[in-house]
Image 1: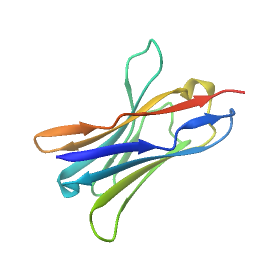
Image 2 (image 1 turned 90 degrees about the vertical axis):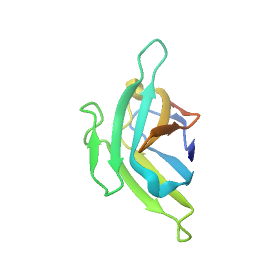
Image 3 (image 1 turned 90 degrees about the horizontal axis):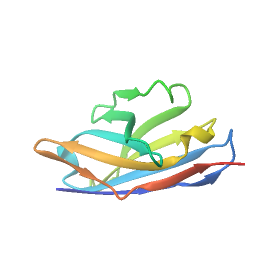
Length: 119
């Protein structure tokens, strides 16, 4: 099993930037893909971006060119962190952002972090 914790959300003005972190611990080498989802009030949860263990990334059209994923593993191999760098933020990016670590046999979700883009 993998424990997933998101952080980095907050309030930012339109055009600003935030970096979200998704820290996974436990059986990190069982993770095949890490996804970032978001859910705005009254809307369905949507997939924002994904990164494989090999570093291949995919982005939703709505965030392409503005959001960037990266992944690091701690020196002691105890933690894998996926960063979602969000630039040129828009009010429509406002949502709770969730990280999902997919592995063989299941997936593990974090508790989410709120991003609010407002002037």
